[in-house]
Length: 321
Ligand SMILES: *[C@@H]1O[C@H](CO)[C@@H](O)[C@H](O)[C@H]1NC(C)=O
Ligand SMILES: *[C@@H]1O[C@H](CO)[C@@H](O)[C@H](O)[C@H]1NC(C)=O
Ligand SMILES: *[C@@H]1O[C@H](CO)[C@@H](O)[C@H](O)[C@H]1NC(C)=O
Image 1 (tube, rainbow, N blue to C red):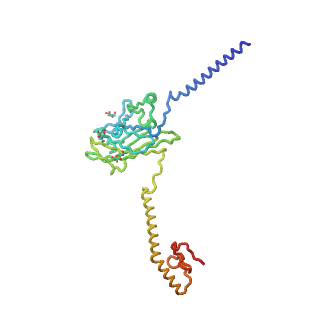
Image 2: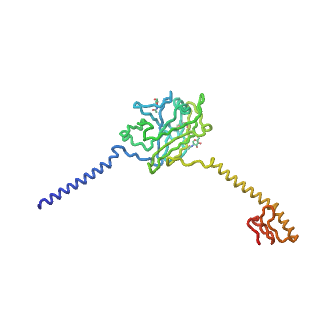
Image 3: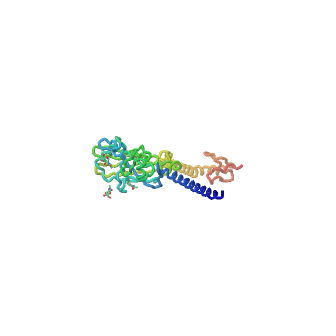
């Protein structure tokens, strides 16, 4: 039995080592498991660029174009002269972005006609989170960002639709494009999904007065006012009919209150007070010792010992008995 001791010990040690190895292996495998199937997409960092791509459409009918596998074809937004790149947003950055499309080609002009005439919307989309590297993405959804063919169109959870509602008017030879646009983006609440776009929309404002006249060959500057919201609810925006009306009303009240006070003071000093003093003097001469509440305003001005209540225009001086 003396020789059995070391042998058992060695066996146990071996088993222990094997067990530890197996545990660590299991850990490693389980740790890598999410990477092998669906990689966890990270959220955007603040200020990170978000590319905008839009549905390609035929210029004959304005209908969307699908690729051989029936997927909607998205192409980058036209290149902006300001940046030399297609339109981009930046996560959480509120600013005004100008995007000048340098040359309106014949096809693009016809598409603009469809957009303005509401035959077809300018349907764009932005990635809800940074797109995974294309190698992984290829495994994931056969998604190739370079060819801009989104595997599942706007139905894909990878993207958030961004409809750009261009307003304007059609003329025979040219277009008026409401080129002043508000662009709103909602991020999902940080606690639920940090760095994630939840919804987005853009629309022309004051298109009757703020528009650009364009024909084929012109340039077109789109002015986007980009605003971000950190949740899916909009903050209340209405505080009276345009804040300035409220403010000016308040100012008007203040001014008119001041003006009427000035008129009252002038009247009291210039008319009423001399009259009372005169009457007071007359009554004193007539032997009347007391004067209470002289006329009009019922303000107790004096109590017979002189012209008290002159200071402060008679407020709160009171009758002194
Ligand atoms: C959009 O579709 C048209 C018509 O199929 C095609 O000629 C054009 O190359 C497409 N645009 C891009 C950027 O792929
Ligand atoms: C756009 O940029 C090009 C090259 O930088 C320039 O030649 C062109 O005049 C610009 N267009 C507009 C409308 O600013
Ligand atoms: C955009 O363009 C308009 C008109 O050309 C100009 O007034 C405005 O300052 C520009 N804004 C930015 C942010 O460049």
